[in-house]
Image 1 (spheres, helix red, strand yellow):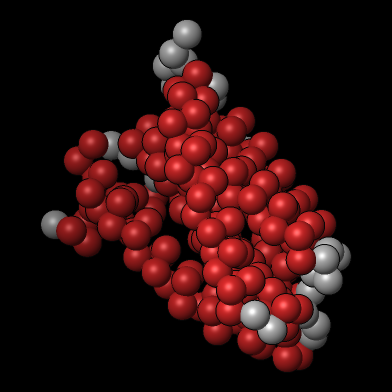
Image 2: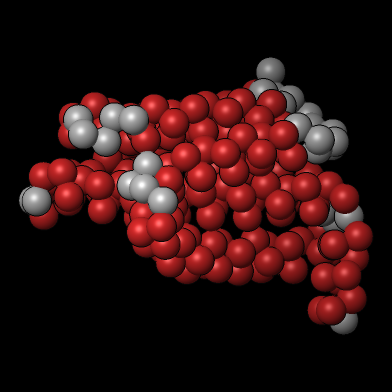
Length: 196
């Protein structure tokens, strides 16, 4: 029964678009997260500075989560996903070339996390709109599994990209992948009731 539901999900073009976008964005997020920690430690040689970076990853969510949820209800989620992917990818390009400026790097990190909060809210709320209710548990399971796999593969890939290319390579790779994700998600088609 579970395998049958999974087959149904992968026959759903809208689900595969959303899942493809999820894989690209989560893998890219892992690349940027691990690369940022490495970058800040190399730049400052300070564990405290890395701690400040991690605060910049988590604090924005506290202040923007409610607003991001409201935006997700008041605007079409396909547009939110497309626009936030483009903004996120563009900020990461800037991040790649400002790695030697600690404070600017932190500022861009905060902007990236704010953008990601809007993306994550819209992304989670889109799953029930492209999947039938009977397949929703299977869909959420697949999404959770891909998150963990992207985290693992991303952490391994960072070291390889830095070693064989350059310290900027993980950032630029992530940016390109998320631009691609923006294109994929722009192909989504679903009905959404907009809250006025």
